Image (cartoon, rainbow, N blue to C red):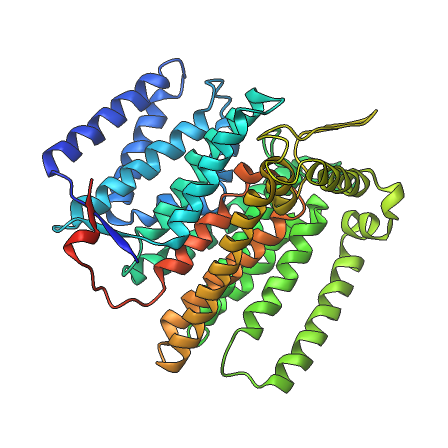
Length: 452
């Protein structure tokens, strides 16, 4: 049974909170010589967020990558500046949404909500018997800051389909803008053709490739939704520019995942015949693989190198084996949140680089069951959305549903190869978007309402 959380905010109270957030934000940046620029940018950002609060959510969807680059580019040394900016932007955007809703916002307490918090609470319990409580506490805290907040942010867009459409548009153009920044950086970095490209020290190649992959998927949505006008043609021409830095990064999993996701986007189109889907998908996969192997020396070299001789791939395989052994050694409770460790002569790993194995080895069968149930349930909702909107001939909603499902597939794919649970919040963001698109009758009872 779904429960409804009714969120009502007083206008004067909301304005005070916004002013307080602005003051705190400016006080944190007092040491910067670029305070005036920050004030001007932030003031403009407030106006933009009031009109389009989904712009802040688009920054979050793309992994806040442009914030990390911006703070490193202007040499801000204040700790966690990008994280604080993310919190301020999303909090302010959320408050603006609340202010525009006269009757407040209702959040359905659904099964995905329950599973999301259950995973978090299980991680908290796992800290008690963790061998690395510091990392376990940090990872759990970031899970609540990012994963859960991303999920809730997506739910705020329920029944706001124009804002969701804007979210994808903003996410695409944020990625395209950052791709242009990468071109500018690469033009001054003569060695980028010989090493894996990264636009900043705080942005490793995998993070870059993941973020631009998300933007490229959003660009594909923009093209499909507007393929009969100039806006769609423009999006189609800009997508290759967005993808180019991914090739320079040499990140195999995100690029291969993007190629598969593009094919999935086509396969999920209900109006396409099965024979055509098979032929187009086969040709598209082979053509994409040929393009990757013959246009990027980084990707082709890393793909053609045997696993045993390629350090990055070998370490991941060793980490997966270690995670399986840890799970078999303690299958019920796991070894504790943050306890995974693989010590090698060259590199120490503290997560298995696989979301399922991470939950299994650290939180046991319950953790594995929760994450599997979460993924399966999201997939079911995704397919239901597509079938429903195809049946009702709601093309706009159909394309939003397909794009959200593809974002989920892409982010889940990446979580199988890199990062820990707290660095894969887009899995939860896209899951929230899928549920926000899920058709409901809107019926609630007084007993099901929780007031915050």
